[in-house]
Length: 117
Image (cartoon, rainbow, N blue to C red; front, side, top):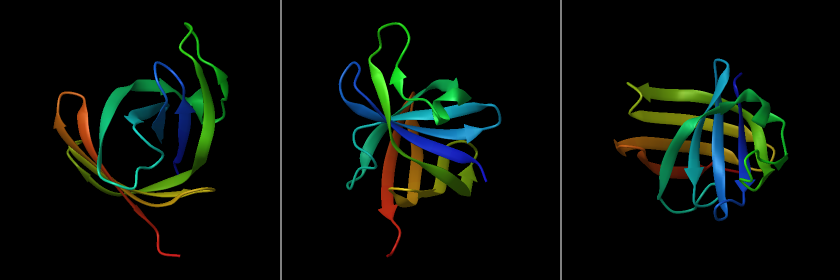
């Protein structure tokens, strides 16, 4: 199973980074909350090093620090030509479905649905 991590990042302001392991890199989106309860806007970032799956601490270039908010595995439920991704996260802190839909540029719509308990 591929892995994911959600990192709390304090630079330039507090936000969370959702990182999905794909091949030898982490596909990354910047989130306003970890995972937000309401639909939100996510910003696609460049791929990050796989090392961030296990890393907490200072980020190079004086870009703040990161702290693990959650980590686990994920399953891809639907990929629509890289424009819509539906994944199921299975983490220690959060379990549920995340839908990312590309709008334009680096802007994505994010909808999170917690798993039934």
